[in-house]
Image (cartoon, rainbow, N blue to C red; front, side, top):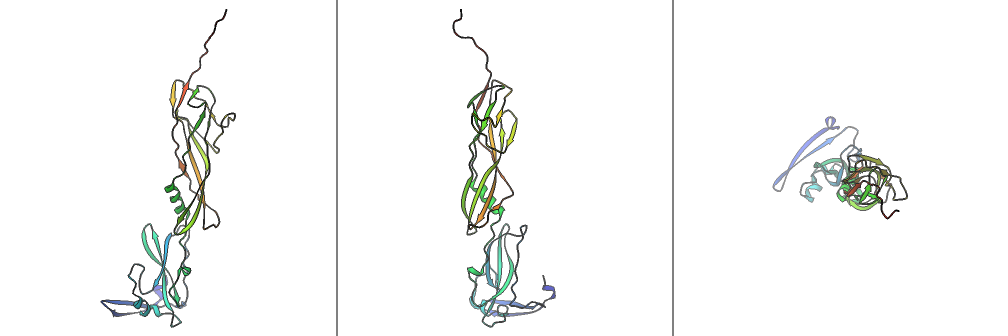
Length: 265
């Protein structure tokens, strides 16, 4: 950002079969020993890998230890034994490396000097979709066959989903819980509830079919809300939900008619 105000001098030297070109810049108010920190905001780029390399090369170049230590740009540190390194970050979509900051080191940077990639809610949500959440079956009472104009009970058996995965080299715990149930009765009507219902004698969720002598295919679609934590840290909510379509069941809707039986005198 301050390149326009920098005073730069270029140099070049033959190194083996190629020419190394370097530029030394003096930026008013900024010393070579200053550490530049790049903060990534939520809507900024997501880096899946970080790497320190000499300012004389790039993360894609084949390392040449002699060049990295002797090029003029790498020696622009206040201490003669220090060398200047640049931190690069790699994005996955699109795949590319971006320069983030520079810093002087007396020894080559280690893993302790390298930031860890940031596990984002979007990254975890993609993993949740890859793993897949449980589909739930709509159950009815009576089961398999019911009566027209009769309170047919609907319910399902729901449980939280938990998983532990490794993302960007870090341990991520995931919990997904059902928060909404959309009941498809099979005759074109639907209803939404916040609970899974219960079997008889509860009548928390019921539906009355108006047409007899037909077979319907009821199902329930479940919407999950998920949260996660990285390396045992603080739990973080994922704003976006995931809806899983449930399998269809077969339910015959019949009509009851009175019938006399037995001998009556």
